[in-house]
Image 1 (cartoon, rainbow, N blue to C red):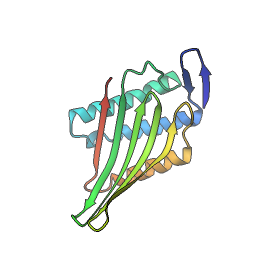
Image 2: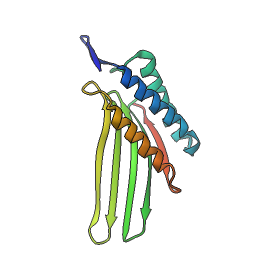
Image 3: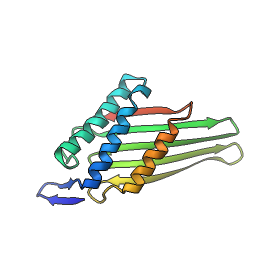
Length: 160
């Protein structure tokens, strides 16, 4: 990843690996359209697609002029009963700070209560470039979740 400094902001210029990762992510996001059941979710999905397409067209991430607060696309499920419950969630979060691929595991037992673990698997930002292996792993795991009957796909966009 390259940085071009001007007096106002740091612009992230995409590397060929970043471009490849973004193309894979936008293709995956497009494949989720049929799994979104609300207009708000479709707006969030559309905003995610537009943000990535803009980054690809411009050759870099949006700067401080980014017109949108945060875009979030998540794939996940929860299963269990009142004594034990667990959930797995993969999400893409986009903002003027960059694009982050996260994993969240949540667990509840009646004996011990609830716990969770959250991991950032890869990030594209002024401080870091996408890790190709981590992006591939995130995509593989997110696609695996789509096989579960009770999977939920949500997308949202917060406009400032």
